[in-house]
Amino acid sequence: MRIANINTEKGTMVVHFYEEDAPITVDNFCTLAKKGFYNGLTFHRVIPDFVIQGGCPIGNGSGGPGYTIPCELTGNNQYHDRGVLSMAHRGRNTGGSQFFICHNRQNTAHLDRNHTCFGKVAQGLEVIDLIRQGDKIISIDIIETT
Image (cartoon, rainbow, N blue to C red; front, side):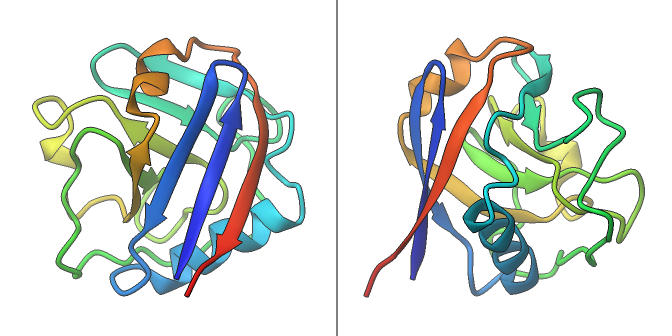
């Protein structure tokens, strides 16, 4: 099992991954994080009561890692709720590095089975509400557990 510490300017969020439901997405995110891809990137899109979004190397929502991954939408945990990490994309099977974290269920339910949910914030939920557009991801540490 893997978990992540998403270290931001506003605090740390501890994420538990949905490895069974979204193995490709989890592997992709962890690989990028271990390479330092996310270090110093910003949350370029912040919509109150909806999502905080980061992972764009350009900083405006148009960039990615140079490849795409398929959506994984059939697992049991494919429901957007407060603290859920989900893969951003510009159409089915076009995700790469950009991800978002949901503020609540009420405003994100329409994303269910359209965007791959691949984890959930287990500690540090309050950080989601503190993030503002332009705040930086300091680093993302991947921790292997047993």
